[in-house]
Image 1 (cartoon, chains in turn yellow, red):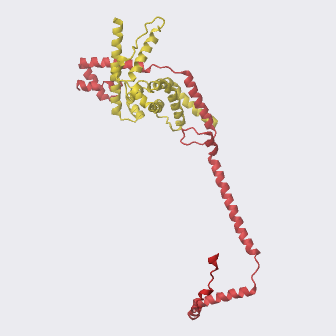
Image 2 (tube, chains in turn orange, cyan):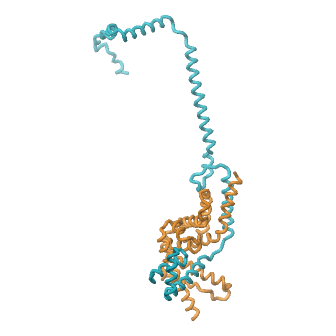
Image 3 (cartoon, helix red, strand yellow):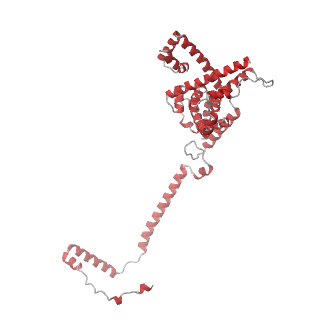
Length: 192
Length: 187
């Protein structure tokens, strides 16, 4: 019996291993509070393992795990819903008031070019995600990080396929506008 | 297909979510419309940057080590029979202690059945024994019982004797009030 249980866990962990990085990135970007991300991930994994008996081989493990993590993150976000509404949800115009996320110019703060670029891009992404609604954010992240098909996103979030397309289009529109604004600000700072 | 229709389908087109027919229509339109081709290229470039930016992230080894250890520990604890509620909720130790396995329930039921059977058999045997132990009735009592039975049978088959038997009894006159017991009033 012990061998069966251990092989059950081994099978689960073998499926989990290749998607751990993507799951973590998704979890960290989806939760409102950064410190909630480890809890969301751990809860999601334990919940998935408890329900692993009901998982069918023909279903996508990746989509299944992302769905469970989405629910965990939403549940944690609901705890901070009131704060989130006032503190985290920004209008795109409000981003102009945020500190500039360009490369550091102080001596001693230099990073290697790729790290620097990634850091800048990441900060812009985090800022951009704050302009999205919860559904827009989840749809965009499930597509970008989860690599899920529209149908899988609809199933994960229990929304119609048309809503997936609508939310994704709006989310991309907002993110594109943000990137364009950030690019303009970088150009202005270079000129000055 | 018109320009605004095509521009609405840019996202699904870039995500390869359109069916073959619509994909071909978008491709044909873009091939003949420089403005739509320019918008589509710009959009594709921006979306690639956004997707790449969102994907940036690292795996935290400590977190995943902890998660994997928890999974293995849960699997080991599940190896011995234990109670579950919904299958996904952890169970407190006291609940597990008070919630025996199905075999324990079956054993309990068997014990109760045994107790019932033993009680039943003892009560039946004691009834028989008490009848056997009781002394035989005297001959006069047997004769009286037989006589009563004969009267009963006669009343059933002989209406005259039954009418005699059913005749109203002579009622006694009511006693005077002074003879009635009233001591209970003072009790």
